[in-house]
Every structure is written in C-alpha cells, then in structure tokens.
Length: 444
Image 1 (cartoon, rainbow, N blue to C red):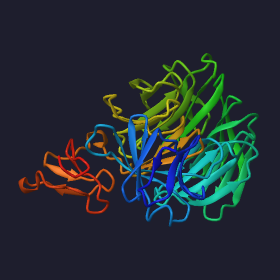
Image 2 (image 1 turned 30 degrees about the vertical axis):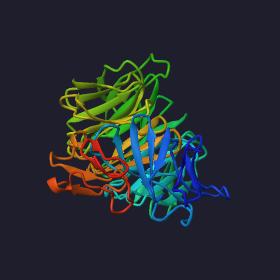
Image 3 (image 1 turned 30 degrees about the horizontal axis):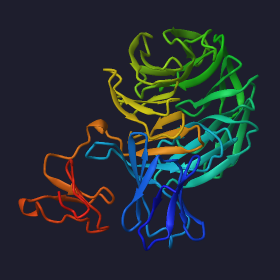
Image 4 (image 1 turned 60 degrees about the vertical axis):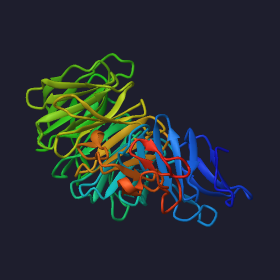
C-alpha cells in the first residue's frame, strides 16, 4: 500500500507491475486504476484527486466522486509537470485496449480519430478527444507493424508480419481488400496523396507500389540491400522515400528516394550510422526527416539530398519522427521512453516528455499540431493535448498568485490576504503561492 484516503474513507492505492489501482480496503474490490506504475502517490483530503510521481515528473488524476461510491473506471492524468516548475505543461490521457506492444499510430486528416497497430494482431480506431475505442479490426495473422489513413479518413491500410497489407473501411470496420506479394514481414505502409496508390516496405528488402482500388501490385523497387523499415509519399505523390538497414548495425543505412511512376532510384541520402526506422516529408515537400538507431534525427533537403540538421538527444534508438503541419516543429520517439520536440532549423530541443512507462515505438502529430500521440511497448497509447510552440516556456506570470496543487484553483493574492489562511475552497487542502508553499493551516 502506498497511500490511503482520509480517515472516514476505506480505500487504498496499490502499485502493481504496470499500473496503480485504487481498491476498497475492506473488500479488496478494485474501484479504479491508472495504467502506469508510479513511484509514490498521495491524495487530497476528500479523496477525489490523486497525485503520482514518476521519475522526475508529477501527474495529477481526478475522480468524479469518491472511489468508494464510483464504478470502476480508468483514471487519466489531468496535469503533468516537472518537479520544481510552477506551472504544469499540458494534460495527457491513456488509451488502453491493446494487449501487446503498439507498433504504429496515425491520425486521420480531421484529427478526430487515431489508428493504432499492435503486436496483438489488431488495428484499433479511437476517438481522439474521448479516448473511446471505436473499432477493433481483426484479420491479420501476425503483429501489425504499420497503419495509415487515406486523405478522407475513410480507409486505413495496415501492414503485418503475415506478409500482407489490408485496407479497411473505417466506418464499418470491414476489410475492403488485401494486398499480397511481399516475401517477408511488411514493416511500413503509406497512402499516396490521391489515395490511388499504397506504398509498402518489407524485410524482403523491397519497396512496393500498389493500386489501392484494384489491389494489384504496380511496381517492385529494388535497391535496398537490407530490410526496409519505413516508406513515405512526397506530398505531390511523385516520389517515395524509404529507409532501412540491418539490425546488426552494418549494411545499407541509407534513405533512398524513388520516382513513384518509373520506379527508378533518384537519390540516396547517406549519413546515418545504423538502420533507419522512420522517414517523413514536411507538408511542403521541401524537407525530409529520418530517425535511426544511431540515436539521431536528421533533417534533409528533399531536392538536393543535403543534410540540414542532425538532432541529438535521444539515449537509444529513435523509432519515429514527423513534422507538424507548419513545419516548424519535429516530434520524435525513442526506446529511451521519451518523446522529444525539436526546432528543425536550429536543432534545438524544445521539450522532452518523459512520462512514458515503456519504450516509445511510434509517434504522430495531429493535423493541426494540437495533439501528439505515442504508441508504447507496454500496449498503451498516450495522447498529449494542447502542445503549443511555446511548450517549454509555459510559466505563470509575475503576479503573486495562489493555486491549489490538486484542483488548480488560481487566485490573485492581494496585500490583505498575506498571512491569512489560504485553503482551497473545493478540497480544503493547502495552497501554493508562486514558489512558496503554505503549511497545512494555509499560512506561508
């Protein structure tokens, strides 16, 4: 047991392998759970809000009603911030449903739905705002390694270790078609901007172009000497980028650019020292971002193939990277359990999100840049909301203010209020005044 509610309440918080549960102390019945194992946890006097500490971060969860009267539910964090900061960055929520690692995530063009592929052989569709599961698409005979929406959001294509691609109707959940031809695991899939074609990469060292409607193979692109782990269409649809390599660290570590019509290789971008896991164009098609096991994210000029910036900070393989809609930020995910935000021109790290409980296998921006979705090795998806350009600079202003660490009630402090009891009007707990903390009586 790591925390107990107020004396009149009879429930406890317990830490387990990958989650924290709130249980009835008398019956042992689980009332709520939080899908992350925290290092320590405390609750407010009324038992409606719980704070959990993970590494150097603090996360707040909120119950509507007390656990002993509420039905079992999932707790989602309302606020997360680094210890010592006077203002929290942004909220987060977990999407729980997959039973094995999440390998790929994608958002539809509206940003209202998320698709995820997992080693549990399923593709799942989620509502971004509510976190509700809309559909579970079953049909693959192996882990699903990659998912992508078409431009309307009406179709999702998925690739799997069963060597197949499948296209699904997102409204009905029905399989529209399947594409067969790869001789080994499919690792990456992408729709063309016009939705007429699909590109795929595979451990068979090929990139293939498919007719999305006729389910026929249009071209097989040979050039990689090792596995292909990522493919991406240029916004014009005229080119395809691919990245790959050998897990042993040798062999082909290049990013290759192909003519989508002729299938000819038009450029080879060398620089990565280990296999490339992700490639993505910016919206204008002028730059390309790649992520690799050499712990780097690299920005390339899409026309000349010249490396613009090398972003260093991850402490392990970088599993994914993408531009936001404006092209002014890049997000990356890593095996070091972090998601990082970068300024692609300067190479500056804007923020490092460390709240993840496992390696981060995939990451994506919402179309408007307001959401970041990450897929984790522990089977969860994590959605970060409201991530503005000034993410790392979020602070309270210089006005003397008091706020409740549990409910975030903010009050401007006047001279007459100094020395008086400043208890939270909602929970009665102590308030914080800028960097000073009131004692339990509410005094500075």
